[in-house]
View 1 (spheres, protein in one colour):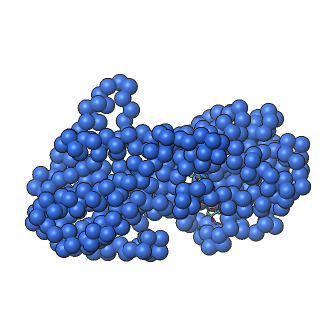
View 2 (cartoon, helix red, strand yellow; view 1 turned 180 degrees about the horizontal axis):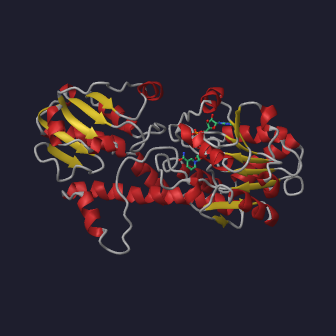
View 3 (cartoon, rainbow, N blue to C red; view 1 turned 135 degrees about the vertical axis):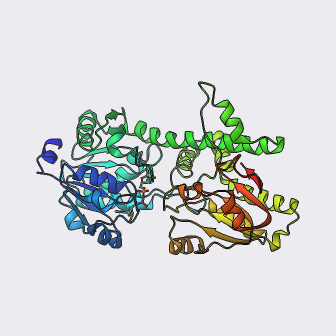
Length: 429
Ligand SMILES: NC(=O)c1ccc[n+]([C@@H]2O[C@H](COP(=O)([O-])OP(=O)(O)OC[C@H]3O[C@@H](n4cnc5c(N)ncnc54)[C@H](O)[C@@H]3O)[C@@H](O)[C@H]2O)c1
C-alpha cells in the first residue's frame, strides 16, 4: 500500500474535512494523491476555492497539494486507503452519538475493495472501531477484515488555534488489526507525520490513549476549579496559589476556567459511557465533569452576588461578556460554556451583551439564540472577561473604566488582569 501511494498508483481518501480531516488531507496531499470527501457540499464548494470553513488553514496551505475535493461516492471509490475523521459528539444526555461514524462506515462499506485499508481517526471509546464500525463495514462490503481488507485506528492531536503542534510536528500514534497492517499504516502515516510514529499494540490501546489524554486534562482542570471554589471561601486568589505552588519541580500547572469545546468536555463521556456499559461506574471522571460543567452558572451567580454587595440591583444591571468562543483566539463556538454563563445571568434578569472579535455573530445567533453586539456600550455595571483572546489582553483598566458606570465590577475568569485592575471591584476564579 505504501509503495503504491508513494508512486501515485493508489489514492488516499479522507472522509470528513473539518478541524481534523482537512489538515490531515492536505498533509498527505503534499506528497501523494488525496481525495477529500465530505457530505457537506457547501464545505466542498468552499474547499475547492481554497477556503477553509473552520478558519484554521489559509489559502496558501492548499498550495502544491494533489487533492480532489468531492461529495461524490464515484470519486471516493477511486481511493484504496480511507481515513475517517467525522464528528463524534454526545447527545443532550451526554451519551455518545455514533450516527455520523456509522454513516461513514456504511459509505466505506459500499465502495470497499479487496486489499483496501480503513483507518479511523475520530475520537471514541476503546472498542468502538472494532465493535461498532467494523460490523457495518463488513455488512455493506461483504468483505472480511484481515483477510480482505485492513482496519486501523490513529488518534488525532490537532488543537484548534495551535500553530505549533501541527500534524508534521507531533508524534502520531497508529494501530492496526494485525502486525502487517500496523507496519503498513505506520509507513503510510510517516508520509505526513514527519516527527515520528508510535505503534500502539492494538486498536483498543490507541483508542484508549486518545481518550485518556483529554480525560486527564479534564480531571486536572476540574481539580483547579474545585480548588478555586474552596479558595474563594478562604479569600485566597487561586492564580496566586498556582503561581507559588508551581515553583515546585513536580507541581502540574493547570488553571481553573470554563471547559468547553468538542474534545476535553466531550471525550470523557465516551469513556464513562463504555465503563458504565461494562459495569463500572466512574467516580473521579464524572465528578470532574460535573464541576467543570457548573463553572459557567457559578461565575454568573458570583457576578450577581458581587453586584448586590456593590449596592446594584441585578434586575437593573447591565453586563458585558467578553468572548463567546470555547477558547481563546479561535472562531470555534461548539459547546462553548460561555453560553451557560450568559443563560444563567439572564435567569437573574440581568441585561447581558456579548462581544467577540473572532466569533461569527450569525453563528452565535443560530447556535445559541443571542446576538453579539457590534458596538460596545459605555454603561455596563460589570465586565466579565470570559475568554482570554489576545485582543482583550491588549486592553487596560482605563478602557474598562471608559465602558462602565461608576462602581463597576470586573470579573476576570482567567485571571489575566490580576494585579492590573485596581480602581474597579476585581474578581477572578
Ligand atoms: N477538533 C479537534 O481539535 C479534534 C482534535 C482531536 C480529535 N478530534 C476528533 O476528530 C473528529 C472530527 O472532529 P472535527 O473537529 O474535525 O469535526 P468537524 O465538525 O470540524 O468536521 C467534521 C466534518 O465531517 C463531515 N462529515 C460528517 N459526517 C460525515 C460523513 N458521514 N462522511 C463524510 N463527511 C462527514 C462534516 O460535514 C464536517 O465537515 C471527532 O471525533 C473529534 O472528536 C477533534
